[in-house]
Length: 582
Image (cartoon, rainbow, N blue to C red; front, top):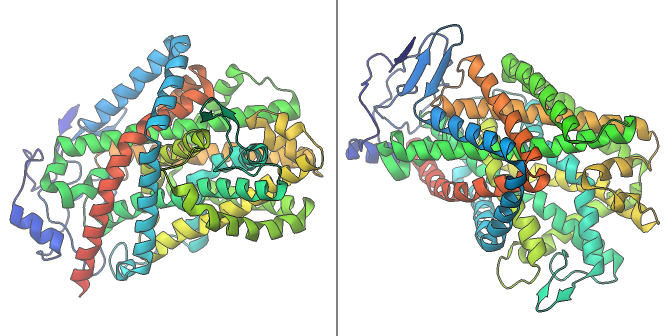
């Protein structure tokens, strides 16, 4: 049985038409009447109410009023039309890609090339906006605003909180590119520019460093940290802050549409809001699929390297199916018992691997290189961030523009997950933790793994550079003591990062597709876990790495516009909070 429901005492007919403009103006300025006590449905976890005075936005809309609910053998509680359109679009894409893989592969390749070559300037400029906004908020009085109200306290300990946000954010990517990217940039920079006709055809960042190994290593590490430092984490931070602010301080549903109340007012409950949430779901699905596909490729390559297992599409498909089942179990257990414990365990394992590489690798070179690399990153940050007047098209478009699109497509997932576990933190604490600390850890990780690979290559070992990207980590570990053990650890890290990403992503997607309900029925969470796995399989079979990257870029482009609008909304919302406390 299905029924369309609204909260008791709330109007059923509201469809996002413009509301009372005076009420909107009062809510956004911080001048408002106290919010009424929210009605809750049995079995549905309400969002925590703000603790202390906050600039609550008063609206006739209540969480779930547009939902369709079923209470049969398979209960569901889905937003109409966000769930239906998103699910049908993803399912249609998956079926077409699986039926026509040979036709889809060139389409994906052309799509990726067109978007990154024509819109690279837009991605780079947008990334700069996000970084500057975060740094400005950290230093401004608005940074003292506490998410959840001035009297709220954090829901998670600092170590647990940090482990969750970092493991969900970049785990698989750091494993996949931790060796290959620094080494690749070093080799390209050392070789320098290569000209054919009137254009450069090399992949060196900026102008390269022809014949100067030390300068090439500095430039290569600076370019790597640039891709994993302030810019990507600023993207995540903007989304996390926006969602947390409008949910925990303003009393709106935990969905992307809520962020746009300062811009759209009551219209966020209609089709403008539906489009924003549908884009968020699609971006999250394809951003996750990119990472899950990378994880499957690296894990199967590692198992083939260690145990002689098959390294083909069927092995990758089987691995995705198996891990999807495990992720489904973790989803059922919930954040506290599932992803939190997995994230903490994986962070410990990653730390052990990092310390091992530092101790048995070129220790002094790694420790000294960490500070040199941070200095190189600071020195090259402005040139690498500049979208104009450069001739390193392959690097700028093939690496940076793709990365920025990938991070943006990930941002609804990572941002909402961070928002869900960050209640009780101040804006300054949130931005500092999400922006600054992971940049240093990413730099240390890349310095240790990438620096060791560069040192081995300079000493004459060619196995790493000659291996496929997904195998280069294991080739590097194979040159260190206890290679079999550390390679197994590497495989486990990839698989658990895979699980935590799928787990966290399904919780986030389900929240959006359930109209902001944070504890919707379990079966629909399992549905989204399955969808993530199916899309990853379809993309792997329909073009491999190129297909994965193409869909991340294509969904990241429209969502960039959404995030730029969110920047204005965040500042507007924080100013209202400051007025409320004044």
